[in-house]
Length: 153
Image (cartoon, rainbow, N blue to C red):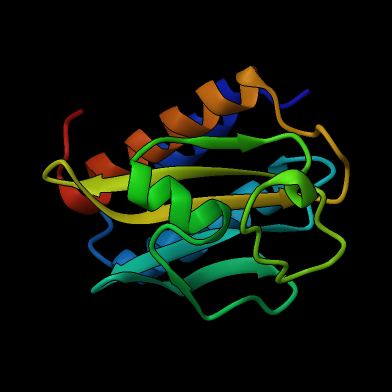
């Protein structure tokens, strides 16, 4: 089981005071990649207009653009709420960037209350993500928002 308290402390020490968004996103995805078990993709998509565009990540090559409202990532951004998906092949409109992915969690990122991107993590194991993961990763996202965008929420 992931010790999210430790992961989030490590994130805080990695990005606090570092003014480089892309570098911070890259280090955050690497931290998740080395800290979480049974995952095959961990990274970020950033909002550009009405679509999400691939940002720093760890894993196989991924979809470059995702329209708002499409797939798990686009749904998380459009609805501004975490998507915890037990089995992605049962998710309406799922976009299969990697056919080995079977479960997924996506957490929106905010600047001044507006969605500016998402944290996306995939697993080859059905049902990999739990409410514990949701809570830990929503805290992870809040740390990212605080240091990248100055959001205090």
